[in-house]
Length: 66
Image (cartoon, rainbow, N blue to C red; front, side, top):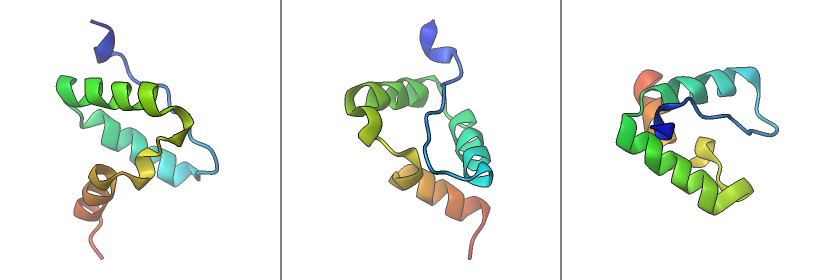
């Protein structure tokens, strides 16, 4: 199934640490979540910014609370 392939990240103006966090976050996705992520990227195109998504922000706060 195509959805199990690792996504290609198209992130502009994001530092390497943030790219690493985004990659780690995406690697936590189950098959259903990955499928939803790929649909969001397809439908929203360049306007989709995972680093601004509620899921990513909540995940990042869990792994590195203030």
